[in-house]
Every structure is written in structure tokens, then in C-alpha cells.
Image (cartoon, one colour):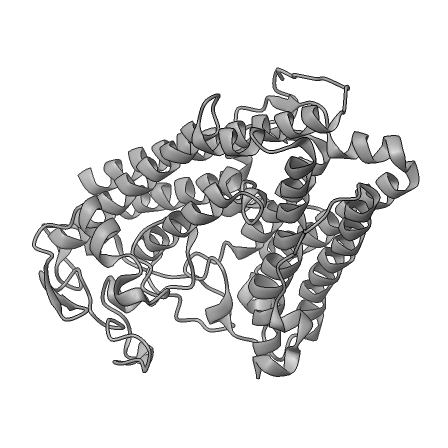
Length: 428
């Protein structure tokens, strides 16, 4: 199928660069358990490093936009956000097995969010929630807030205010005040198109002090600047954590090699099954609900899902293509499995390729106007099937992951589940 180059695809292509660019390759075919685990940490260092550097590029684009809030500069900031998602989504396979990552991840990629906490919303959003007293708190419009019975001074919107008082305020997970999705909302605004084509349409004048739309432009500028600064700082923390002596790498290598392999496979299986196939994909398909879309403001979900799956493939094959076009390659779980059961390794690689193809089919559809929210619409059986194919491929791959766990005789591994897959009646 011919791939169409849209602005979204162009941003991703720019992030990845050409495959024919110069490559620096580290390789070691001595696929012992300890070497496989060490190289898994090397890939983490690279992918989080790329996430940090692309966030710096995003910050630069946002600063340019705030200095000159034109529609063209807003579009450049949006494209920088999309490009920054490419390496970050490939890092999510490091969740679940690595407590250091899972405990940190909510600061940068929590979703879905009740956007009324942050800024103005359309009337259809409503005015209250049974479970969230801050559903329409609108920090940008209100310099004083009542949170948990205490008065919070939000006169100056700073990274510290967001991290310490607003993010998951009152213990409500939907009060997402930091990370990629808060920035996404501030760049795109609400997507009011339902399951019809179209993303958010926030005007650049929302940030223009000389021609302010929707009020509070100075405070909106403060929030966007502060939340972006916080994202950069959080990503730098995790990039450093995977360097030699960093806390995430240290926690991994201090385990036994077998525990390290368990960490790798826990991340692969839990992301593939419970998180990606279940909570991020099947749930939205079952409900035909665009509110369950991961990148719901930008309509970038097809790429986020594709690169999540790519991250699983990366750690199995022991390779990752950096945003500068170079490769990190080394001892892989694939090689270790092949040394014990070559047929099972071939099966796993085939399943990963099938998932990649199913993800690419969603990308191709999005490039022709059918983004994820359109694909899951109730009266779109062909689109629904494309999404179901992706779910089925992920589930099928997880079954082979479980076979690999048994082959390697790894104990006490629990993979994340999802009601949407394991108990569908509970969803309704």
C-alpha cells in the first residue's frame, strides 16, 4: 500500500531521518542472559536520551511560538510534539517490569485527563463530575484554588505548582496536569469532532497578548511554558537514570540475570496485552468512544500505538534506530531464544512482524483521513476491523511471549490484564 506523506507523517519522518543515513552500530552476538540484560539497558539509555533531546526541540518550538504566536509557529510546535512522541512511545516497553520507570511514568504520559482542570472547555464538556471536584477548576482562569480543603495560591503558574499541587490533585487520576497530554491539550485544544474526522482547533490567538482570544492569555502562556519545562526536566531525570550508575540501570543490573530476563518479558507482555491491546485499543473499540483515544486532542493515536508496538519489537530483537538515523544493536532476547528453540524464535519474530503490519495499516488509514477515532466509530465496520486486527496481533504475540517465559523457566511473572479482553461484560 502506498504511504501518503501528511504533516503528521512528515514530522515522524523528520524525527527518524532517512534509513540510509550513516549508522553507528554496536554489536555483540554473545547472547548470554547477562549480556542481553545489559544491552536492554543500553537501548533504554538511547531511547530515553532521544526522548529528552526531542523534548528540548519541542521546548524550543514552543518558545518560538510564544515569542511570535502565529498559526504557522503553532503548527511548528505541534509538529515538534508529534516528533517527540516517536522515541518516547518506544520507551513504554520499559514500564511494568521496571518499578523505577512505572513509578515515574505517570508524570509524563498519564491519560485520559479532565481538561477542565487546566483551561476553558466547550459546553458539551459539562460543569461537574461525580468523582472529580476539580473537573472544571480551570487553573488558567483562576489564580486561587480549593484543593482537598486547602487554598492553593496559583498566582504564578510554575513547574513546582503543577508537579506539587495540580498533578493528580485530590488523588484523582484524571487530574492530569503535567506531561505530554497536558501540552497536547494546550496546543490543540479539545477535539469536538467525536468520531468524525478532525483534531482540536485551538487558535494561536489563545496565546497572543495583543489579540487575545478566550481570555487569560498571559496565564495560558505561563502554563504552556511551565509544563513544557517540567516535561524536559522529567525526561532528563529518566535519561540520566539509565546511564552507568543511574538509579534505573543500577536497579536492573543488581538483579540476577534471570530476574533481568523476567523484567524484559514482563514489560513486553504487559504492554502488548493489558495496556496496548486492552486499555488503549480494545476498550475504545468496544465503546466506540473517542474519549478513550490515547492522543485524543491531536488525533496522533495511530502513531502512538504503532511506536508502542515497535518498542516491544526493539527489545526482543535487541535493536533501536535513534532519531539521528544511527542504530544501537547488540545481544538480543531473540538470539537467546533461538539458541534454545529456533522455531519459537521464528514464531515470535513472525508475530512481531504481523503486529507491525497491523499497526501500519492503521497508520495508512489515518494518512487517508481515518484516524483512530474515526476507525472506532460505531458505523465503520471496515475501520473497526483494522483496529481489531491490531488487537488480535498483539494478543497472539503475547501468547508466544508466554511460551518464551516457559522456555526460559522464568518464575513469578504476572502480565497485566484488561477487562476489555478478560471480562468484557464488566466494561458495560
